Image (cartoon, rainbow, N blue to C red; front, side, top):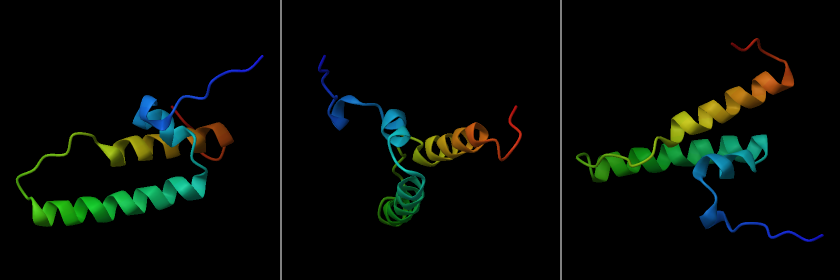
Length: 73
């Protein structure tokens, strides 16, 4: 039976992170840090609408726990 794969616009940011490979996730993290730095220089009064770094770190922690490399609480 066929099923429809949702478009990325329909997926939450957290779910999109889960679909990235580890290297892609780390690259994305680096890119968001660069963009955030540029945005803060250009628009210091602006406040971000999402906490990208927190979500990326959480995903990395979950992956680390699932692989058994680090003890998780």
